[in-house]
Image (cartoon, rainbow, N blue to C red):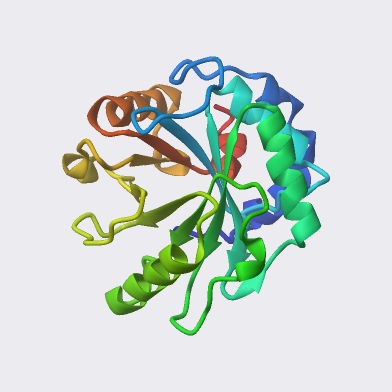
Length: 233
């Protein structure tokens, strides 16, 4: 997953808590109301903690944005490069708050090295699933991590976000990071397409990409919350 470490990323760390304008805006590309997702209508917003931190202090703004933009699921990065970013109590708070808004909530784990392990302390905190973000790892390591998750985790769905459009991985949800026009040929039923906000030319382009993904796959994952705030969509 693309990590943005430019100066604007650090500036937005302080900007996100005051996202009243963003939270109050309306995206016409998705349904205006949130509802429990089915396998045919996943509308996911990814939160990349490497771009701008979202924690208890500004989590309510994220929930408001998700609902006003028509998303029904959050992929919330809780683990980066071997480091668990939150306590169990904090994770339980995120889950409960999201569920109050009728939003499904997945813990997203970002792996950068094959030696990194899945933290079992995040299991069964009420989350709807766990997503593995591990495209930079060798296939053998990806297979091992997904197998470990399936064997040890039974509290929700398994998901994988990947840049390998021919992957043989078979989680419950497979999200292809189809962030360029050439990638759209790989969309089909049985996978979920991806849209990267910062790679879109304008709001119209963003909305067209979302509609294409919804029409040609099982849903859409938008990467990411930071990009929505920066672009002002």
